[in-house]
View 1: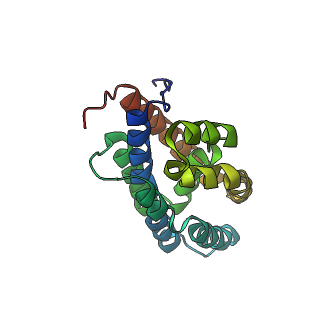
View 2: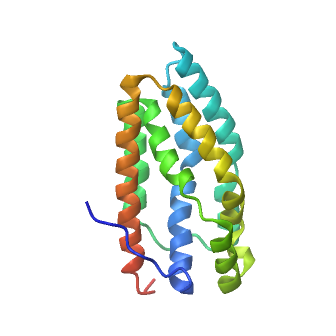
Length: 187
């Protein structure tokens, strides 16, 4: 597996491309959670708790793609790694188990930017580009704790699926970092 590489988000062209890639991920979030709620069998205590968690989290994430689309022009690029990452989750939710989405969410929610980084990016590129990042920097610690709690409730047979999904998601995040590092502003 390749390692993540440093990405110069202080470079405006790379920062914009990064946000466009993030948009491609966020725009699918509400639908992914909806699909997982539909696919999850509420015939167990975990299934019922998981559906409640997804409903609450979907409400918390509602509108974030719209925010990002208002902050930047989201048209113009497609990240192959971002599309593959989201597509993998649709497959796992529909054909393996809806609980797989928890691994994906843990990787994405568990590594939100810290507020100091957001402040640096805002200073470099303006606050209007980083409204969504600021929100996540301020709120994702609580989301991570909630995710850990629901993951810990998952039965043993789902723990491996959740873990495998997290590993796969992390691999896609690495690929996204390579796409961004290799970007030279030629959109």
